[in-house]
Length: 371
Image (cartoon, rainbow, N blue to C red; front, side, top):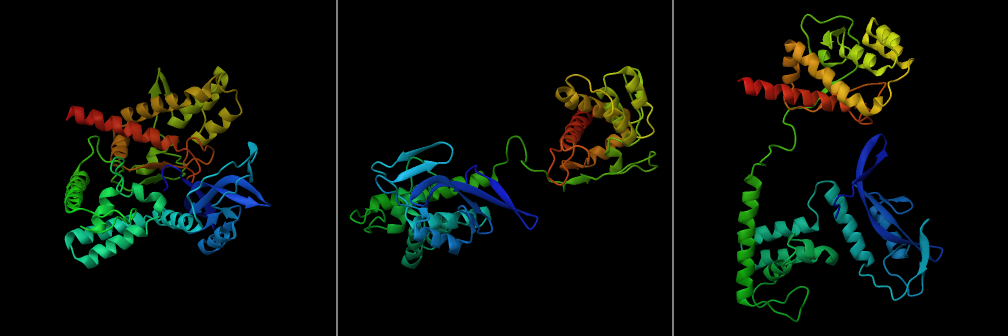
């Protein structure tokens, strides 16, 4: 199961999602506690990138260890050494391989063995033939034993209702062949699944109290542009900080947000005046870069930028309308000089995009209040 353990690797310039789990690798007779990294393309990193077929061979050979010998020597790199004393492990090569295959399915958004079992159960409940029950039982048995308890996501009853359902009245429980299912318990299991289906249907139709998690509008990219003058018919280029849109703050008028930001960043008044008089926002940045930064600037720059953006769009309603027209889209702002402000192909933090989304939300709130 993936849980919250998310990682990735780059392959031919493509980001391949992955996850990891603990494992022991036996190398030179020592058992090293390490991590297996499992990726969506079916590649497993067990101190070497291998395919699933190659990974199975690593399991069969004992390189990836599923049994631990009493008295065996173990190591966790850079942490310590110890000796196994009466070790207990429930994994086998077959179980670990099945879990890894499930993980690859999950990383690709495909039904894993649990999903396939529950789908087979749905088929059986819709048409309760012995053939369909047999298929559901086979699908249940295909789930790795180590994860069957979690199949229903029920921490109280575990997978007992599932076992009862696929066994049927008078049938043996998969986990306890010597225990047969009574008609009463079977009826309770059927009721459990019927109620579960009603709950799932209700959950799917429930609208989150706070609205949608993801935006409905396509993302809007704000690529580099270096406007020298205001456009007669402004477009999304006007959302860039160096767009010529004068703003006045504390009785000082700045040619653009970029001018204001870089003027605020410098410590000396003379340097501030030079930045303010720069021909373009790019030139303002160049001048500021050669001056001394204000003390604590990195801790205050985000608040300064938010204030400047609010001023820009409050003082230019036409530009505010263009920002509002982006709806709830994610705003992706590129900044070649800053991985803090820019998204830069996913390598930056995109703080400028986030602040523009914040200001857009405030503008929408003001508009709603007026209306």
